[in-house]
Length: 327
Image 1 (tube, rainbow, N blue to C red):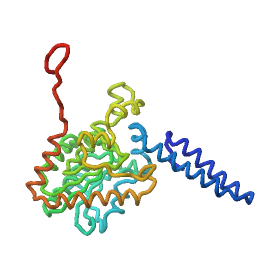
Image 2 (cartoon, rainbow, N blue to C red):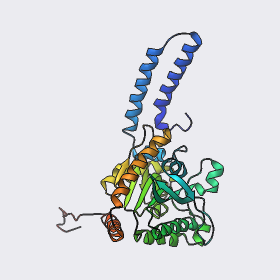
Image 3 (cartoon, one colour):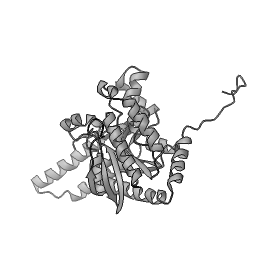
Image 4 (cartoon, rainbow, N blue to C red):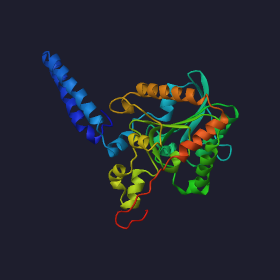
């Protein structure tokens, strides 16, 4: 299968044996139904075993899979009546961020997502999902519009980080991200954020200040991408796998730290194996959390969001056994 990952090699070999046996049976007119059934059962067991024990660096590769569903893929499957809106009213239209109006189970919402490309040409046009300042300002414009008309906001986060080039810095990249953080914290409508692939650095956080932050099972979320961390710590970006192991970037880790509120399950093998299954799981979670948040008034939503982020980063003082001092 195109896009098979290195740790899936045993599955690839097993699938090849099954296909060869099927072809041999057809060519020779021999019935291998029982043998094929046993191999397929073993294949399913092996797949469940592998994906129930994948490591953080393996999850990183699943989250970056070239066939993983993008924001547009999920928007089309989850929402109805989607109307895309363009531009930041200041500079231009950043294709790395898409957004507009839609309905979630009949409820009008504003939905915004970071959009990776589907092929090389599309990736270049969308800067591989890394937004310029006008992308973040477009997102903020749509969120402020939603706040004005009392529409809930749903964001899909999927980026390695904000665009790092000179053009972005010249147009105020850090200011645009900082403004989003401030303005999102003060929105008076429900805000639900979903990490669908990779949530990296300030580029992710600029669209993830929500009342609820959810993550797909094999998504990752971190203050810096594993590649960036490896470049800083070891001066070698190729050690990204080693960095991913140490950074606590998985959904399970972040749920334990109370950075996120829920892990949304993926089909066995990852979200790229079944778009509709993944979209259905996300939709169920969104409707459930939106019903809870819709019962709150504007002041309560702001306080809920404040308390969510205020509690992140708990720490404890420990008595030093050697010096007898508080560290």
